[in-house]
Amino acid sequence: MSLTYCAAAPGQPHHGPYHDGEYGFPSSDDRVLFERLVLEINQAGLSWLTILKKRPAFRAAFDEFDIDRVAAYGEVERARLLADAGIIRNRLKVDAVIENARRIIALRESHGSFDGWLRAHHPLSKAEWVKLFGRTFRFTGGEIVGEFLMSLGYLPGAHQADCPVQAAVLAQSPPWKAAVDAGYLGYQLME
Figure 1 (cartoon, rainbow, N blue to C red):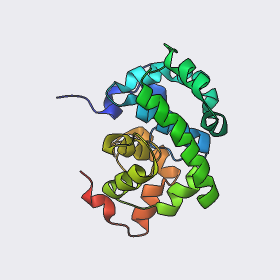
Figure 2 (figure 1 turned 180 degrees about the vertical axis):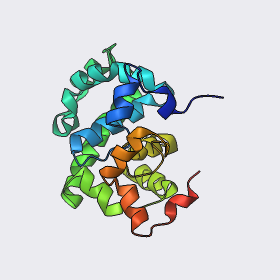
Figure 3 (figure 1 turned 90 degrees about the vertical axis):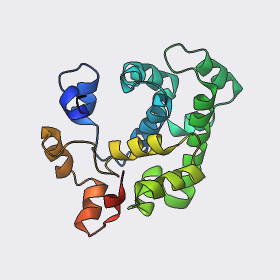
Figure 4 (figure 1 turned 60 degrees about the vertical axis):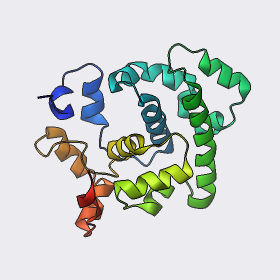
């Protein structure tokens, strides 16, 4: 039997701080949202521990996740990223990050911010979110979208009910909890 994240993460140097202070907590900061999307995209096919260990390098490589700067990247920056051993040097992932920054800028025009776009579509079931992300962003399959949304409180399930961190998450009224409190039943269909 494998341990759950809530049982395994506490006390670990990389997982512990993420589990205790970020995972499942809502944020309206577009940089935080963009960073989480970038990390989830790069985690595809790899362990979350690898991504957490490389997180400082990702921050440096992608200009602290400044959306406007990343959206302006051209071939010079793309080549720099593909040569950076501190991050995941996968052309599809690098290209997706740059293109997704550009798409977030477009979302600002229609919704004011990435956060505004998320809130405008909330609540949705995981399947509906996956379809929406697939139409809006690059390199965003079901696992990436699910973890991204769960990590930011748009989908339930980040913490077990008996996890001490769950109370802290609930105290911040994550979007999924607000939706359930308002009568939304769509999360019952989650796998």
